[in-house]
Amino acid sequence: MRGANNRTVKSMNRTAALQYIRKQGQASRADIAAYTRLSFTAVKNMIDELVSYRLIGEVGYDESSGGRKPLLYKLKADRFYAIGLHLSVSRIHVAVLDLEGRVHAHYETATDQDKLRSDAIVLQLIGCIEEAIRLSDVDRGLILGIGLAIPGPLDPFEGVVLSPPNMQGLAGVPLKRRIADHFGIAAFIEKDADLIALGEYWHGAARGKQNVFYLDADIGIGSGMIFGGQLHHGSPYGAGEVGHGTIHLDGPRCNCGNYGCLEAVASGIAIERRAGEELRRGADAPYRESYLADEKSVSLYTILEEAGAGNGSGDGDALSKQLLLESARYVGIAVGNVVHLLMPEIVIIGGTLPYAYPPYFEHARDIALNRIFAAFSDKVRIVKAELGMLGGAIGAGTLVLEHFFAKDVSEWADMEPPLQVQQ
Ligand SMILES: [Zn+2]
Image (cartoon, rainbow, N blue to C red; front, side, top):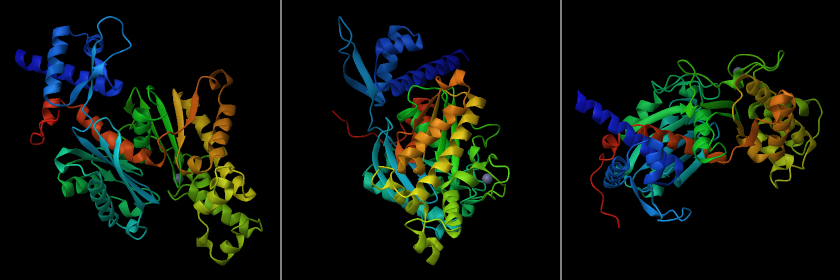
């Protein structure tokens, strides 16, 4: 028993040290000793072991310290890779991340709208992953797993998509198992907005923060949360559906079946619907004639383009700007509500709407700050997402890394045949 306990403690220390190096980017033996509170000899042995697994390597000396300069260690970024896929209504992004979470290769394509109506979309996802692996030129034996960022609601533990309002073809599909079976490697799934939050936490606007709220303003509206450095699923799961909280008492019907949801009044879908209402009512816009001839000719992207998004100035068609700022106002109010409820360290707003139309973010932030208790409004940080449209894929790949870094290294560091020795 004693031996088993020692092994467990040793394994936990080794896992903690590796996580520390991963989080810090690089660390000396003294840094790791201070963090783990282990003796210098124990740390030396542990580092030697991690080096022998080729998970870390020497990176040089810490020039900032006086006296004898300590040797620094960092992850061997090309030791393993993780794949992250983000499926949205309009695009599919796949990123191949190295062990440090950097994008090694990425593939992007339009979501096949015909396939999206049924589980045939799974075939497109498989094709996209294959394409990303081919582009990356990475040995398949070095791929730890595949992370999937999919619109909720879904069951992240069973890996089943439940009933995404804008993606009914995936309802009830055991997506995690189908992807894992096809590729013969581990697969993981989480709600898209949760994984964008995870990506921003590791590599974007929330670096160094522990409590993060992310709101995604896109075709739909979603949100994800990290508390104490961990994704917050709720119990058992389903947290973060802020897009389906009622925000307009007499509002229109939402794709989820409810009325007046944030998504029903502020999402990309809502903006398209609002444009139609205004044009039929006689409002003018550069796309008015085109819309009256064929309603389908005007999409969210037309509206974003005409609002001035194309040249980044934000100074374009009045109706388009009005509709986008109307959406931003609702999003700002929702953010204010969330801050009063959760008081996160940082709120991140991302998605096509703020990316494509910069005044959107500023308006949403100002509305939120105006509504937050004055005593708190100078303490909460509301910022724009940093990872852009690749955030979901980066987060999904990061999810894979999270799972492997949480295991004992002996469980995964020997999972493939020995590599050629790299000098
Ligand atoms: Zn709804």
